[in-house]
Image 1 (cartoon, one colour):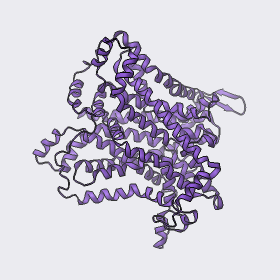
Image 2 (image 1 turned 180 degrees about the horizontal axis):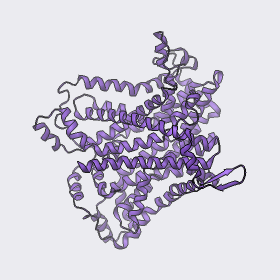
Image 3 (image 1 turned 45 degrees about the vertical axis):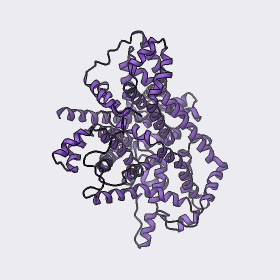
Image 4 (image 1 turned 90 degrees about the vertical axis):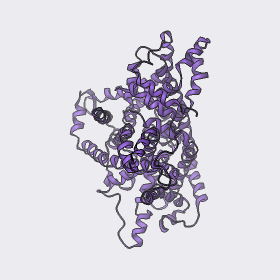
Length: 308
Length: 314
């Protein structure tokens, strides 16, 4: 794999992702834009309709869910649904929410720190075996995470280490793609002259990393942080195989279980309203995070996308 | 961020092959190794070790008579002959050759339309199309499961209102495409943002020449923008290939609604999961998940290799 030769291209994009003014041919409203506009509007409906449905459905009681039209409101029952969701099964939903937050924050923070240090090490130092190590890390980007989850489960279960928070967090700390991004980012944004100058001033390597390099790496760090956060928040397969007690479940595994119960149960146990309301609550934090941190995910996605 | 000027200097740096890498590092190398060490330790313990352990397990078999014994590659040859496994791989392959191009073409079209600046409210589409990415696959599958459903899905409501039979989205023939729709819904916006960011990174001078020559927006898109997007398309393609082979959450969620259609081996991943947890066939499951990983690795590598060769030929 000829990665080192391609890498700097990505660095360029990673560092200056979005600072470009509108350019030629881009007079808004110029030309015939009716067809593209209708096309885009149709797809806007497609992408937002399910979320609209979810919100509307979460305002309905179980009876109304079955009896009223799906895409319009009936009696407004949202607060009842929310309290029912949080009190169901002795309030286990709150545990799931807390677990999801904990797994996501710890995994994202840890993975981003590890990636920043390792990416910086790969980018700014030469040491024996570096090429081989990096090649290994890079090759592993293409190993599907679920193909890894079963082997990891088998190993952890042999060691008696399943069904605890660390069995979900530890595997989430290893983010080969994060290393790759941070190496490219460090190559492009931490000038070697600056490191040299700090050395001449007598600063140790760790001090240089903490005080100088890390600051320059901050945007890349936030990007890796965000992506690991989303990946852990959305993760289903790993916690599903690792955890056996509902009190350790994240939201994804818990809600899937409630849904399976509701579908299988029917009648009084078919509490689809809690599944729907629980689903709505579970996506609100990420949607908010994406809306407020747009700058970061857009530049982050960009830096991955321009890779050669 | 004030990194605007980096472009030209970094590009210049790239063009000097290997020049910049020869910096006097000398005795600082050890520090570099130490910076990478924390990650490498975890990488060895949680990436390499599980794979090695699974490889080891896959060479054994737990039998009722004789206990745990070495069987060599028998689990693998059995896997190649296991119709449930090969059918699952074939199904995922069909999914891949249809869903991935549809999704990437849609994402490209959206990105090119927004980038052309010819429509208003570009930002609205960028955010609106991307929002589904913030929805976990499991939740997306739950949601679409309800939407597809006959009890309170809006499609069934509409069909009932006009007096026709509700569509059977989760039947034998439609299931794979209903799952494909969930993936398309979730990931199209994500790919669109990648393409859009790549488009924004193209130097404006390239368009100016085209504009001077009087090229239309469509011609500019096809002849200038698309070729420059090749790396981004390649990256998205590889990630989508990897994602397709991992299909699990959607079929596993839909199993609750349509158990007879999904069965226990709709996708290879679901099969491996059921083998390991329902059937306790750990050795066989290890072999299959290993094979699956190898298939993904080889397919991704081939995609990359083919693309590079094409690029080299020009």
